[in-house]
Image (tube, rainbow, N blue to C red; front, side, top):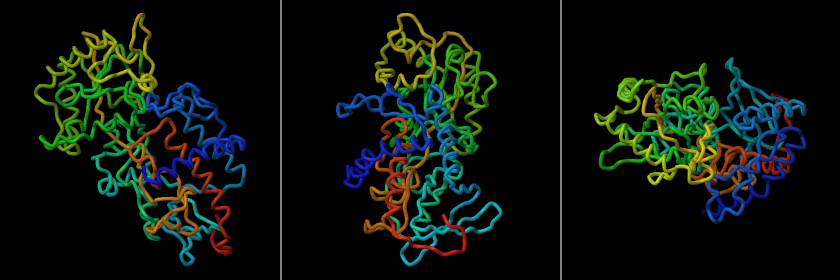
Length: 450
Protein backbone atom coordinates (compact mmCIF):
# COMPACT_ATOMS: atom_id res chain seq x y z
CA UNK A 1 0.00 0.00 0.00
CA UNK A 2 1.38 3.39 -1.02
CA UNK A 3 1.73 6.10 1.67
CA UNK A 4 -1.04 8.13 0.02
CA UNK A 5 -3.45 5.18 0.27
CA UNK A 6 -2.45 4.35 3.83
CA UNK A 7 -2.95 7.95 4.92
CA UNK A 8 -6.35 8.03 3.23
CA UNK A 9 -7.46 4.90 5.09
CA UNK A 10 -6.22 6.35 8.38
CA UNK A 11 -8.12 9.59 7.70
CA UNK A 12 -11.32 7.58 7.08
CA UNK A 13 -10.97 5.73 10.37
CA UNK A 14 -10.48 9.00 12.22
CA UNK A 15 -13.39 10.86 10.65
CA UNK A 16 -16.09 8.30 9.78
CA UNK A 17 -17.62 8.17 13.23
CA UNK A 18 -17.74 11.92 13.98
CA UNK A 19 -19.06 12.57 10.47
CA UNK A 20 -21.88 10.04 10.88
CA UNK A 21 -22.74 11.31 14.35
CA UNK A 22 -22.84 14.93 13.18
CA UNK A 23 -25.23 14.08 10.35
CA UNK A 24 -27.43 12.11 12.74
CA UNK A 25 -27.47 14.97 15.27
CA UNK A 26 -28.53 17.38 12.53
CA UNK A 27 -31.27 14.92 11.50
CA UNK A 28 -29.67 14.87 8.04
CA UNK A 29 -28.83 11.17 8.12
CA UNK A 30 -30.43 9.40 11.10
CA UNK A 31 -29.20 5.83 11.10
CA UNK A 32 -29.55 2.43 12.63
CA UNK A 33 -26.71 0.01 13.29
CA UNK A 34 -26.64 -3.32 11.39
CA UNK A 35 -24.70 -5.22 14.00
CA UNK A 36 -24.80 -8.66 12.34
CA UNK A 37 -23.90 -7.69 8.77
CA UNK A 38 -20.48 -9.14 7.92
CA UNK A 39 -17.63 -7.44 6.11
CA UNK A 40 -17.06 -8.75 2.61
CA UNK A 41 -13.67 -10.05 3.79
CA UNK A 42 -14.67 -11.07 7.30
CA UNK A 43 -12.67 -14.32 7.20
CA UNK A 44 -9.31 -12.59 6.77
CA UNK A 45 -7.27 -12.89 9.99
CA UNK A 46 -6.39 -9.17 10.02
CA UNK A 47 -10.09 -8.23 10.14
CA UNK A 48 -10.48 -7.80 13.89
CA UNK A 49 -14.07 -6.54 13.58
CA UNK A 50 -15.62 -8.89 11.00
CA UNK A 51 -19.18 -7.65 11.63
CA UNK A 52 -20.90 -4.51 12.78
CA UNK A 53 -19.37 -1.83 10.55
CA UNK A 54 -22.51 -1.11 8.53
CA UNK A 55 -24.94 1.73 9.21
CA UNK A 56 -28.09 2.32 7.14
CA UNK A 57 -30.64 5.14 7.14
CA UNK A 58 -33.00 4.67 10.06
CA UNK A 59 -36.17 4.32 7.97
CA UNK A 60 -34.72 1.95 5.37
CA UNK A 61 -36.32 -1.44 4.83
CA UNK A 62 -35.02 -4.41 6.75
CA UNK A 63 -33.35 -5.57 3.54
CA UNK A 64 -31.59 -2.15 3.32
CA UNK A 65 -32.42 -1.97 -0.41
CA UNK A 66 -33.89 1.55 -0.24
CA UNK A 67 -31.16 3.04 1.93
CA UNK A 68 -30.01 5.42 -0.78
CA UNK A 69 -33.50 6.76 -1.40
CA UNK A 70 -33.95 7.46 2.30
CA UNK A 71 -30.53 9.11 2.58
CA UNK A 72 -31.32 11.45 -0.32
CA UNK A 73 -34.67 12.33 1.22
CA UNK A 74 -33.38 13.18 4.70
CA UNK A 75 -30.20 14.94 3.57
CA UNK A 76 -32.06 17.06 1.00
CA UNK A 77 -34.66 18.05 3.58
CA UNK A 78 -31.97 19.01 6.11
CA UNK A 79 -30.06 21.03 3.51
CA UNK A 80 -33.14 23.00 2.53
CA UNK A 81 -34.02 23.51 6.20
CA UNK A 82 -30.60 25.04 6.76
CA UNK A 83 -30.85 27.37 3.78
CA UNK A 84 -28.77 25.48 1.23
CA UNK A 85 -29.57 26.58 -2.33
CA UNK A 86 -29.87 23.31 -4.26
CA UNK A 87 -29.74 23.81 -8.04
CA UNK A 88 -30.68 20.87 -10.29
CA UNK A 89 -30.59 20.98 -14.06
CA UNK A 90 -27.17 22.69 -14.11
CA UNK A 91 -23.93 21.21 -15.42
CA UNK A 92 -20.72 22.68 -14.03
CA UNK A 93 -18.24 22.91 -16.90
CA UNK A 94 -15.40 25.17 -15.84
CA UNK A 95 -13.72 26.80 -12.88
CA UNK A 96 -13.48 30.50 -12.08
CA UNK A 97 -9.92 31.42 -11.12
CA UNK A 98 -8.25 34.32 -9.37
CA UNK A 99 -4.61 33.69 -10.12
CA UNK A 100 -3.87 30.09 -9.03
CA UNK A 101 -6.86 29.95 -6.67
CA UNK A 102 -10.30 28.53 -7.48
CA UNK A 103 -12.95 31.07 -6.51
CA UNK A 104 -16.06 29.71 -8.22
CA UNK A 105 -17.57 27.73 -11.08
CA UNK A 106 -19.54 28.29 -14.25
CA UNK A 107 -22.48 26.04 -15.02
CA UNK A 108 -24.79 25.68 -17.99
CA UNK A 109 -28.50 25.37 -17.31
CA UNK A 110 -31.02 23.28 -19.21
CA UNK A 111 -31.95 26.40 -21.20
CA UNK A 112 -28.33 27.00 -22.22
CA UNK A 113 -27.85 29.99 -19.95
CA UNK A 114 -24.52 30.23 -18.12
CA UNK A 115 -24.57 30.67 -14.36
CA UNK A 116 -21.50 31.88 -12.48
CA UNK A 117 -21.38 30.86 -8.83
CA UNK A 118 -18.67 32.34 -6.61
CA UNK A 119 -17.34 30.75 -3.43
CA UNK A 120 -16.17 32.81 -0.48
CA UNK A 121 -13.52 30.25 0.49
CA UNK A 122 -13.51 27.07 -1.61
CA UNK A 123 -15.27 24.87 -4.16
CA UNK A 124 -15.98 21.20 -3.33
CA UNK A 125 -16.83 18.76 -6.13
CA UNK A 126 -18.85 15.56 -5.56
CA UNK A 127 -19.92 15.05 -9.16
CA UNK A 128 -19.48 11.29 -9.64
CA UNK A 129 -17.24 9.20 -11.86
CA UNK A 130 -17.10 8.54 -15.61
CA UNK A 131 -19.28 5.44 -15.95
CA UNK A 132 -21.31 6.91 -18.82
CA UNK A 133 -18.51 8.50 -20.85
CA UNK A 134 -17.59 5.86 -23.43
CA UNK A 135 -14.33 7.54 -24.42
CA UNK A 136 -13.05 7.80 -20.85
CA UNK A 137 -14.14 4.21 -20.12
CA UNK A 138 -12.38 2.83 -23.16
CA UNK A 139 -9.30 4.95 -22.57
CA UNK A 140 -8.80 4.12 -18.90
CA UNK A 141 -10.64 0.99 -17.76
CA UNK A 142 -8.84 -2.25 -18.51
CA UNK A 143 -12.10 -4.13 -19.11
CA UNK A 144 -14.61 -3.88 -22.01
CA UNK A 145 -17.45 -2.54 -19.88
CA UNK A 146 -20.80 -1.88 -21.58
CA UNK A 147 -21.96 0.57 -18.93
CA UNK A 148 -23.11 0.73 -15.37
CA UNK A 149 -25.79 1.79 -12.94
CA UNK A 150 -24.41 5.18 -11.87
CA UNK A 151 -26.51 8.25 -12.59
CA UNK A 152 -26.54 8.86 -16.35
CA UNK A 153 -24.96 12.28 -15.75
CA UNK A 154 -21.78 10.64 -14.43
CA UNK A 155 -19.62 11.45 -17.44
CA UNK A 156 -16.32 12.32 -15.80
CA UNK A 157 -16.76 16.08 -15.77
CA UNK A 158 -14.28 16.58 -12.94
CA UNK A 159 -11.56 14.65 -14.79
CA UNK A 160 -11.63 17.33 -17.47
CA UNK A 161 -12.34 20.27 -15.19
CA UNK A 162 -9.54 19.34 -12.80
CA UNK A 163 -7.13 18.80 -15.66
CA UNK A 164 -7.37 22.46 -16.65
CA UNK A 165 -5.73 23.50 -13.37
CA UNK A 166 -3.17 20.69 -13.36
CA UNK A 167 -4.87 18.13 -11.12
CA UNK A 168 -2.93 14.88 -10.83
CA UNK A 169 -4.97 11.82 -11.83
CA UNK A 170 -4.83 8.55 -9.94
CA UNK A 171 -6.37 5.03 -10.13
CA UNK A 172 -8.16 5.77 -13.40
CA UNK A 173 -8.11 2.05 -14.30
CA UNK A 174 -10.30 0.96 -11.37
CA UNK A 175 -14.05 0.90 -10.77
CA UNK A 176 -16.60 -0.30 -8.25
CA UNK A 177 -17.81 -3.36 -10.15
CA UNK A 178 -20.96 -5.46 -10.24
CA UNK A 179 -22.84 -7.79 -12.60
CA UNK A 180 -25.47 -6.01 -14.68
CA UNK A 181 -28.18 -7.21 -17.10
CA UNK A 182 -26.68 -6.99 -20.59
CA UNK A 183 -29.83 -5.77 -22.30
CA UNK A 184 -30.46 -2.88 -19.93
CA UNK A 185 -26.81 -1.83 -20.15
CA UNK A 186 -26.86 -1.76 -23.95
CA UNK A 187 -30.12 0.23 -23.86
CA UNK A 188 -28.54 2.71 -21.38
CA UNK A 189 -31.55 2.32 -19.13
CA UNK A 190 -31.39 5.07 -16.49
CA UNK A 191 -33.30 2.86 -14.04
CA UNK A 192 -30.84 -0.02 -14.25
CA UNK A 193 -29.69 -1.35 -10.87
CA UNK A 194 -26.53 -3.39 -10.42
CA UNK A 195 -26.91 -6.98 -9.26
CA UNK A 196 -25.88 -6.51 -5.64
CA UNK A 197 -27.46 -9.83 -4.84
CA UNK A 198 -27.86 -12.84 -7.15
CA UNK A 199 -30.96 -14.49 -5.75
CA UNK A 200 -32.04 -18.11 -5.93
CA UNK A 201 -30.74 -21.41 -4.63
CA UNK A 202 -31.74 -23.60 -7.62
CA UNK A 203 -29.82 -21.25 -9.93
CA UNK A 204 -26.44 -21.19 -11.66
CA UNK A 205 -24.38 -19.18 -14.15
CA UNK A 206 -23.02 -20.81 -17.32
CA UNK A 207 -20.88 -19.56 -20.20
CA UNK A 208 -21.68 -19.66 -23.92
CA UNK A 209 -20.73 -23.34 -23.96
CA UNK A 210 -23.09 -24.22 -21.11
CA UNK A 211 -20.33 -24.70 -18.53
CA UNK A 212 -20.57 -23.42 -14.98
CA UNK A 213 -17.60 -21.08 -14.45
CA UNK A 214 -18.10 -19.14 -11.20
CA UNK A 215 -19.32 -19.09 -7.60
CA UNK A 216 -22.55 -17.20 -8.20
CA UNK A 217 -22.78 -15.91 -4.62
CA UNK A 218 -19.49 -14.02 -4.53
CA UNK A 219 -19.71 -10.36 -3.48
CA UNK A 220 -20.70 -8.33 -6.52
CA UNK A 221 -17.35 -6.59 -7.01
CA UNK A 222 -15.52 -9.92 -7.07
CA UNK A 223 -18.18 -11.68 -9.13
CA UNK A 224 -17.87 -9.01 -11.81
CA UNK A 225 -14.16 -9.70 -12.37
CA UNK A 226 -15.02 -13.07 -13.95
CA UNK A 227 -16.59 -11.40 -16.97
CA UNK A 228 -13.29 -9.80 -17.94
CA UNK A 229 -10.90 -12.72 -17.73
CA UNK A 230 -8.85 -12.85 -20.92
CA UNK A 231 -8.14 -16.08 -22.82
CA UNK A 232 -4.84 -15.45 -24.58
CA UNK A 233 -5.10 -18.68 -26.57
CA UNK A 234 -8.56 -18.02 -27.99
CA UNK A 235 -8.00 -14.26 -28.18
CA UNK A 236 -11.29 -13.43 -26.44
CA UNK A 237 -13.07 -12.66 -23.21
CA UNK A 238 -14.81 -16.04 -22.90
CA UNK A 239 -17.07 -14.92 -20.05
CA UNK A 240 -17.99 -11.49 -21.40
CA UNK A 241 -21.63 -12.57 -21.38
CA UNK A 242 -22.78 -15.25 -18.94
CA UNK A 243 -26.24 -16.78 -18.68
CA UNK A 244 -28.13 -17.04 -15.42
CA UNK A 245 -30.30 -20.19 -15.36
CA UNK A 246 -33.03 -20.92 -12.82
CA UNK A 247 -36.09 -23.14 -12.40
CA UNK A 248 -39.67 -22.67 -11.28
CA UNK A 249 -38.72 -23.22 -7.65
CA UNK A 250 -36.45 -20.17 -7.59
CA UNK A 251 -39.01 -18.21 -9.58
CA UNK A 252 -41.63 -19.01 -6.95
CA UNK A 253 -39.53 -18.49 -3.84
CA UNK A 254 -36.74 -16.02 -4.71
CA UNK A 255 -38.46 -13.43 -6.91
CA UNK A 256 -37.75 -9.86 -5.83
CA UNK A 257 -37.38 -6.44 -7.44
CA UNK A 258 -34.68 -5.43 -4.93
CA UNK A 259 -30.92 -5.16 -5.44
CA UNK A 260 -31.11 -5.61 -9.20
CA UNK A 261 -32.09 -9.27 -8.96
CA UNK A 262 -33.07 -10.81 -12.27
CA UNK A 263 -35.60 -13.24 -10.78
CA UNK A 264 -38.47 -10.79 -10.55
CA UNK A 265 -42.06 -11.19 -9.32
CA UNK A 266 -45.10 -11.25 -11.56
CA UNK A 267 -46.00 -7.78 -12.75
CA UNK A 268 -42.44 -6.44 -12.54
CA UNK A 269 -40.37 -5.50 -15.59
CA UNK A 270 -39.31 -8.91 -16.91
CA UNK A 271 -38.28 -8.08 -20.47
CA UNK A 272 -34.83 -9.53 -19.72
CA UNK A 273 -36.25 -12.96 -18.80
CA UNK A 274 -35.94 -15.80 -21.32
CA UNK A 275 -38.26 -18.80 -20.94
CA UNK A 276 -38.36 -22.41 -22.11
CA UNK A 277 -40.48 -25.40 -21.16
CA UNK A 278 -37.44 -27.67 -21.63
CA UNK A 279 -33.71 -27.10 -21.60
CA UNK A 280 -33.38 -27.49 -25.41
CA UNK A 281 -36.21 -24.99 -25.88
CA UNK A 282 -34.57 -22.60 -23.42
CA UNK A 283 -31.27 -22.93 -25.29
CA UNK A 284 -32.96 -22.02 -28.57
CA UNK A 285 -34.49 -18.91 -26.98
CA UNK A 286 -31.15 -17.88 -25.47
CA UNK A 287 -29.46 -18.31 -28.87
CA UNK A 288 -32.04 -16.04 -30.48
CA UNK A 289 -31.73 -13.41 -27.75
CA UNK A 290 -27.93 -13.33 -27.96
CA UNK A 291 -28.13 -12.87 -31.72
CA UNK A 292 -29.79 -9.48 -31.18
CA UNK A 293 -26.63 -8.18 -29.50
CA UNK A 294 -23.79 -9.55 -31.60
CA UNK A 295 -23.15 -6.02 -32.93
CA UNK A 296 -22.07 -4.90 -29.45
CA UNK A 297 -20.68 -8.11 -27.95
CA UNK A 298 -18.22 -8.88 -30.74
CA UNK A 299 -20.30 -11.77 -32.02
CA UNK A 300 -20.97 -13.67 -28.78
CA UNK A 301 -23.24 -16.62 -29.48
CA UNK A 302 -23.95 -20.05 -28.05
CA UNK A 303 -21.59 -22.89 -28.87
CA UNK A 304 -22.96 -25.94 -30.64
CA UNK A 305 -22.30 -27.88 -27.45
CA UNK A 306 -24.33 -25.53 -25.24
CA UNK A 307 -27.37 -27.73 -24.59
CA UNK A 308 -25.46 -30.91 -23.83
CA UNK A 309 -23.00 -29.05 -21.58
CA UNK A 310 -25.84 -27.22 -19.83
CA UNK A 311 -27.52 -30.52 -19.02
CA UNK A 312 -24.22 -31.85 -17.66
CA UNK A 313 -23.59 -28.65 -15.68
CA UNK A 314 -27.01 -28.84 -14.06
CA UNK A 315 -26.49 -32.52 -13.23
CA UNK A 316 -23.15 -31.69 -11.60
CA UNK A 317 -24.65 -28.71 -9.74
CA UNK A 318 -27.50 -30.88 -8.48
CA UNK A 319 -25.04 -33.48 -7.25
CA UNK A 320 -23.12 -30.84 -5.29
CA UNK A 321 -26.31 -29.23 -3.99
CA UNK A 322 -27.41 -32.61 -2.70
CA UNK A 323 -24.27 -32.86 -0.56
CA UNK A 324 -24.38 -29.21 0.49
CA UNK A 325 -20.70 -28.76 -0.41
CA UNK A 326 -19.66 -26.97 -3.59
CA UNK A 327 -16.23 -28.50 -4.11
CA UNK A 328 -16.03 -26.90 -7.57
CA UNK A 329 -16.45 -23.23 -6.62
CA UNK A 330 -17.04 -22.98 -2.88
CA UNK A 331 -20.54 -21.51 -3.02
CA UNK A 332 -21.96 -20.72 0.40
CA UNK A 333 -18.73 -21.26 2.33
CA UNK A 334 -18.32 -17.64 3.47
CA UNK A 335 -20.68 -15.53 5.55
CA UNK A 336 -21.00 -12.77 2.95
CA UNK A 337 -22.22 -15.28 0.34
CA UNK A 338 -25.19 -16.11 2.50
CA UNK A 339 -25.84 -12.37 2.95
CA UNK A 340 -26.29 -12.09 -0.82
CA UNK A 341 -28.39 -15.20 -1.14
CA UNK A 342 -31.79 -13.55 -1.27
CA UNK A 343 -34.97 -15.09 0.06
CA UNK A 344 -35.22 -18.88 -0.36
CA UNK A 345 -37.55 -21.57 0.96
CA UNK A 346 -36.37 -23.35 4.07
CA UNK A 347 -35.77 -27.07 3.70
CA UNK A 348 -35.37 -29.55 6.58
CA UNK A 349 -31.84 -30.84 7.02
CA UNK A 350 -30.30 -28.57 4.42
CA UNK A 351 -26.68 -27.66 5.22
CA UNK A 352 -26.05 -25.04 2.50
CA UNK A 353 -28.75 -22.36 2.17
CA UNK A 354 -27.29 -21.09 -1.12
CA UNK A 355 -27.77 -24.31 -3.12
CA UNK A 356 -30.67 -26.58 -4.06
CA UNK A 357 -30.98 -28.97 -7.02
CA UNK A 358 -32.71 -27.61 -10.12
CA UNK A 359 -35.90 -29.37 -11.12
CA UNK A 360 -35.69 -32.23 -13.60
CA UNK A 361 -38.61 -30.70 -15.50
CA UNK A 362 -39.41 -27.23 -16.79
CA UNK A 363 -40.29 -24.53 -17.10
CA UNK A 364 -36.81 -22.97 -16.98
CA UNK A 365 -35.72 -19.35 -17.06
CA UNK A 366 -32.59 -17.46 -18.12
CA UNK A 367 -31.14 -13.95 -18.43
CA UNK A 368 -28.03 -12.46 -20.06
CA UNK A 369 -25.51 -11.01 -17.61
CA UNK A 370 -22.29 -9.05 -18.07
CA UNK A 371 -19.96 -7.02 -15.88
CA UNK A 372 -20.47 -3.33 -15.27
CA UNK A 373 -19.73 -0.52 -12.88
CA UNK A 374 -21.51 0.93 -9.90
CA UNK A 375 -19.24 3.81 -10.81
CA UNK A 376 -15.59 4.43 -11.54
CA UNK A 377 -13.09 5.22 -8.79
CA UNK A 378 -10.42 7.20 -10.62
CA UNK A 379 -9.93 10.96 -10.83
CA UNK A 380 -7.91 13.77 -9.31
CA UNK A 381 -5.69 12.75 -6.42
CA UNK A 382 -6.59 14.40 -3.13
CA UNK A 383 -5.00 15.01 0.25
CA UNK A 384 -6.32 13.56 3.50
CA UNK A 385 -8.45 16.71 3.73
CA UNK A 386 -9.87 16.21 0.22
CA UNK A 387 -7.75 18.99 -1.30
CA UNK A 388 -7.13 18.37 -5.00
CA UNK A 389 -3.40 17.93 -5.65
CA UNK A 390 -1.31 19.02 -8.61
CA UNK A 391 1.52 17.06 -10.24
CA UNK A 392 3.89 18.09 -7.41
CA UNK A 393 1.44 16.86 -4.74
CA UNK A 394 0.65 20.45 -3.80
CA UNK A 395 -2.93 21.45 -2.99
CA UNK A 396 -4.62 23.55 -5.68
CA UNK A 397 -5.88 26.55 -3.67
CA UNK A 398 -9.60 26.51 -3.08
CA UNK A 399 -10.35 23.20 -4.84
CA UNK A 400 -11.66 20.06 -3.11
CA UNK A 401 -13.21 16.77 -4.23
CA UNK A 402 -14.95 13.84 -2.56
CA UNK A 403 -16.63 10.64 -3.70
CA UNK A 404 -16.34 8.93 -7.06
CA UNK A 405 -15.19 12.05 -8.92
CA UNK A 406 -11.78 11.72 -7.25
CA UNK A 407 -9.33 8.85 -6.86
CA UNK A 408 -10.22 6.16 -4.32
CA UNK A 409 -7.51 4.61 -2.18
CA UNK A 410 -9.27 1.24 -2.41
CA UNK A 411 -7.89 0.47 -5.87
CA UNK A 412 -9.51 -2.86 -6.91
CA UNK A 413 -10.90 -3.73 -3.47
CA UNK A 414 -14.45 -3.41 -2.13
CA UNK A 415 -14.23 -3.51 1.65
CA UNK A 416 -17.81 -3.79 2.87
CA UNK A 417 -21.33 -2.49 2.44
CA UNK A 418 -21.18 1.29 2.03
CA UNK A 419 -17.59 1.28 0.75
CA UNK A 420 -18.51 4.10 -1.62
CA UNK A 421 -20.79 6.30 0.50
CA UNK A 422 -18.90 5.75 3.78
CA UNK A 423 -15.57 7.27 2.64
CA UNK A 424 -17.50 10.00 0.85
CA UNK A 425 -19.14 11.07 4.10
CA UNK A 426 -15.85 10.89 6.01
CA UNK A 427 -13.96 12.97 3.46
CA UNK A 428 -16.82 15.45 3.04
CA UNK A 429 -16.56 16.05 6.78
CA UNK A 430 -12.82 16.65 6.48
CA UNK A 431 -13.26 18.81 3.37
CA UNK A 432 -15.82 21.01 5.11
CA UNK A 433 -13.50 21.57 8.05
CA UNK A 434 -10.51 22.32 5.85
CA UNK A 435 -12.48 24.58 3.50
CA UNK A 436 -13.86 26.53 6.45
CA UNK A 437 -10.30 27.34 7.55
CA UNK A 438 -9.42 28.74 4.11
CA UNK A 439 -9.03 32.51 3.73
CA UNK A 440 -11.86 34.50 2.15
CA UNK A 441 -10.96 34.63 -1.53
CA UNK A 442 -13.96 36.23 -3.20
CA UNK A 443 -16.47 38.83 -2.08
CA UNK A 444 -17.70 40.15 -5.47
CA UNK A 445 -21.35 41.06 -5.68
CA UNK A 446 -21.97 39.87 -9.24
CA UNK A 447 -23.22 36.39 -10.02
CA UNK A 448 -24.48 33.90 -7.51
CA UNK A 449 -22.46 33.15 -4.40
CA UNK A 450 -22.17 29.59 -3.12
